[in-house]
Length: 247
Image (cartoon, rainbow, N blue to C red; front, top):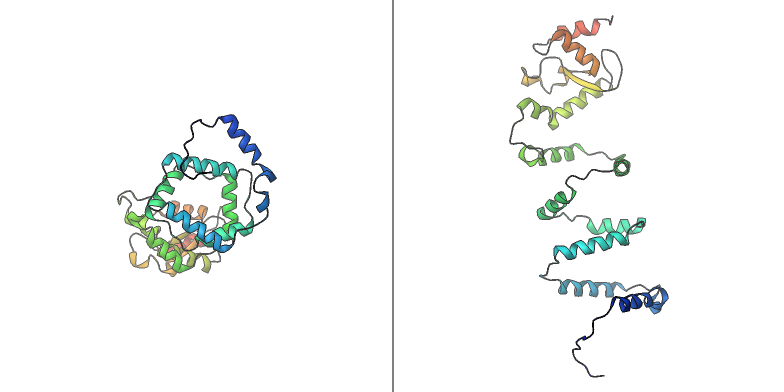
């Protein structure tokens, strides 16, 4: 048969396409290669060839949408094995998406809420993981001020910024640990508050002094400030409050 470019005169009908598709299903298509796997060298060559073809080219948004839709249909109801998940994880290790890619991902997920099942899985995967103090400090610096997506142009007061900072959180944790995570008034646990014995706002030099903190439960903390107010609190007030019995 002579070589050359052949132009299809008659278009392929939907019926013909359907017949061809049916003939290629199951053992009729590629039965000779069933169960065989490509060699690593073959995989590498195919990958390089594909990279050369797409070099400098970009798929249209319509094409990307179709590919995504087809992939979604293919994986519908299927689950990747643990081995496959591990390989995917290892292949992505150390790769940081570009700012443009992260922006696209953010726009894609905008307005989407996690389902209860997703929240449960995230919780399970995070169980037993603890960030080191160094990591916490880096995260704090990375999202501080206008780096945070909650940034509103610097409208927060200075006290709010300090209370949300790493140094305050470390002070709070140290006070709770010293008091064995119990309220010093009612000796209960629950939702705890760290209370500044000498006022936070008027004595900046004592803000992170562990001796200037004491653990209260939410109820006892509210009761203290209801009796003594929120300003000019003293150590004498604290002693009186701790010795006072509930009626």
